[in-house]
Length: 292
Length: 175
Image 1 (cartoon, chains in turn blue, orange):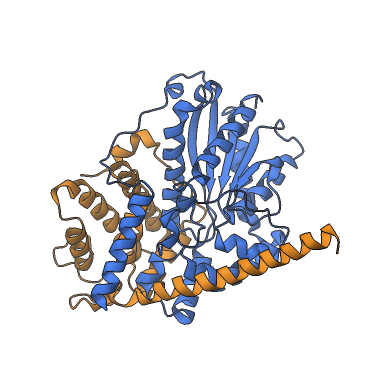
Image 2: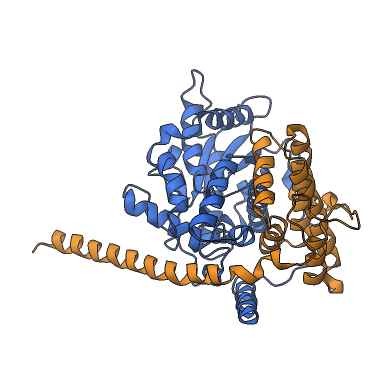
């Protein structure tokens, strides 16, 4: 039994690597953006905002994945986008309390060991067990109850980026519950007495449980995202799916089988290309507005 | 029956199909998830203790069972750089677990973890996440270690930890 299960894991891992085009890769230095060498080139701040299943380390990796994929496509993007210097940031949505709830429930209700829990945090077992939905139910059904201190902290960061002396345009790429925080932060930024110029802050949502994107921004939710599909059954106003992961073997992996992982969205096609294209068009729109 | 009725009917059917598909795939993959859980847990290792810090006989800052995992999983010559990056991350996590009661030290160690992860992304820009998931599962293989990791996260939940841009990630590698 032990040997058989080990073989299953090996086969799944191999299929993931091959299916996603993840061949072993030697480290290669990422080239610096040429626009960043020019002090007068316009700056954009691109923020990743994590979801509820994402710990601090995963948030760093998700932000890193976004940066890597964006930079890999940048040379083929519109000249206006290439002429901007893009700086990457994290706005953390604290999740340790929720993940602790998932851990305890996963151990009690699914009989998971600690090791297996961490291997399958974004897998189908946890996504559909009701464990995560139960924890998400309150914040998702009532946006007023998401953490106000976090909204203020995020909104302050965006305002500081847009205002002098930074004068940066801001693009937010939130994942999952991060979309609720981003929408609320967006509203907060533009509800100030002296709001920044319209169009200086945009959102490209990923795997959103919300019924809108702040500022009429773009979004991508996969039809294979089990968590968001489950939420949509309860809350029909949730934005409809408009992308997918194709026939990606990621969906058979314990780590990604929930179809909700941000890394999965930026690995599988067509979701990866569509998210990057949405970012490009949002950056083009941002370029047309002077923040200062 | 109107076209609208037909439309609503087909929507209902589609929804039912979606629910059925969810139930079936949940059963299949949850079963796989649970069936894979037992023997993959390193708790069967005879040398591993259940204490928070565990055993670090060679005093390199990494638990011996994690050292063994890294050395056996990434034993070949071409993985030497990855082996070092993972040990850098493992050392930062071990420090985070042990010092999780301290807010100041948690911030220090979270920053160390970020540098280690940037090193990992620089050395394996395509496959870093699967590698991370596996090694972190080894590091957090008991409830107390998992709880300490989450407590350390909680200590820095409002901190603004600086990030290195991708073109500087290689500089985050300690060896």
